[in-house]
Length: 124
Image 1: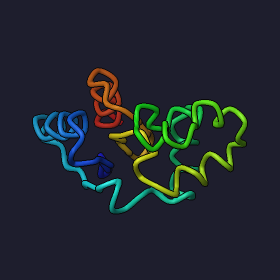
Image 2: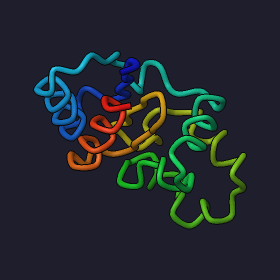
Image 3: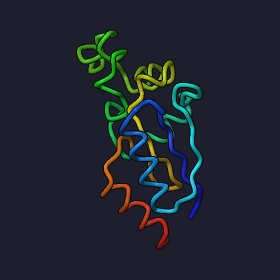
């Protein structure tokens, strides 16, 4: 199986839970602090395409910055390109953790979903 990438924010309890889960599975992965090394617009575009999700799913809708910028009202008016550009400006806008594999990108931690994807990739 190709290397996994975990984008996380170390102070986030869900991110720590996801990291602990990956550790318990004995999986090799690269760790990247989303606040120190924010995803680029190009990475986000690639991950969005690989995920098959709407770009809104990549926003940290419960974050302070999201609320401060009033994005709940503004985001529906933005084009896909504008959303990606905005996400690339600050890691605190990006939903986390994000698990990136060769074939999948999963924003947010749902253990069953992560387990299914990892199993699928191990069997490939």
